[in-house]
Length: 299
Image 1 (cartoon, one colour):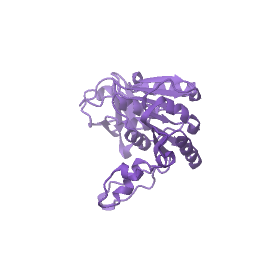
Image 2: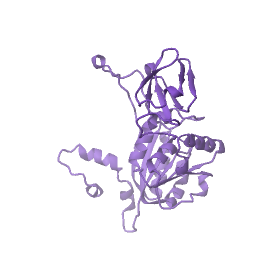
Image 3: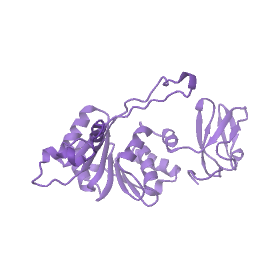
Image 4: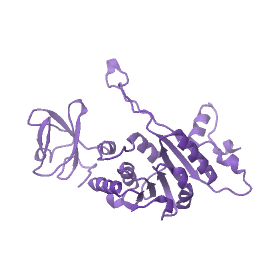
């Protein structure tokens, strides 16, 4: 078993998160006869197997640890990597805003260490399929190793190729780009993505965002949304409730868009400059009695 989110007790082969003092944690795979060694002491795997999740155990040095099932975010943060991975705050937002779900065909370019690939594979389920393009063989090998560890590699088809050659797939439900120059590949994206499907990209600089917006409008993509996510944690101290000293601020710009069909008689410029769905709804909600109707905005 690779990643058990359903059982009530630890089983041989499970991925286990041991959380100690000051939330210091270790994620290990439990195997009969094995042991975890750290500066906080040794914990035998046999002492974990059969225990209910949430149980407290102690190392041979007397340091306490709680046995927890790791969340997807925990696994992504601990994922072996050679480059910066996408943060869970972006990954969760991407899954929701691109409608990623069971049974879908999803394509990504720029596999990297496989953080987003892992989340996509988890979201599409056993009946879905993720196709991941990567131009660097060493990164693809690392991503495959990471997904194998989590038991999700069977849901992903890895392709070692430059996407300038185009994508093999058509009628794709959602397509995400995590590459240096996404604006150079929008024609290829449009060919692969179904009309009305979901497109997304992450970019580090504002200049890249501007170039991508222009490329999208030239290829009849509309409902463009651009955002950044700032995540701040707060201290769980009822008498001194305040934010922690550090926060995860800007880590990239997220851009979302939808390919649409533009008829010759349509005013193409007006249609493609319609504000994105999220922006439009936010403006509408500021009006107390306004009805949320995208058709009114188009007028």
